[in-house]
Length: 110
Image (cartoon, rainbow, N blue to C red):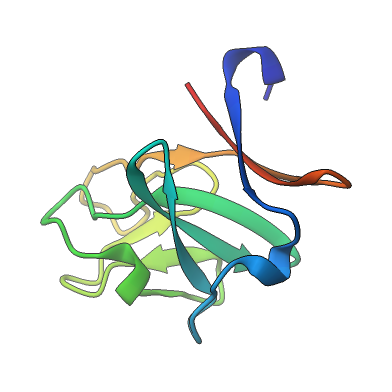
């Protein structure tokens, strides 16, 4: 993803500063907006705080072995990289790129 399309907000100096729950999902506030940050396969992924279907809190869900975040309300599954609903209901979850550099952890938002 080209960096020029995003404003990069600093989340933390180091990944250890993010408060990940046992499900490897942390909640962050960026520019006044709650979002989720997931840790999966040595990567970080940013996505919506609420499910686009029924508003379930995605941080209360979990990341399954395939790398999909599962909503705690109706078990809808979303790709944490693209936001595509992979369980067939046709919804899209908002996602944002996360990058780790020597200067910290950043999330890109338009």
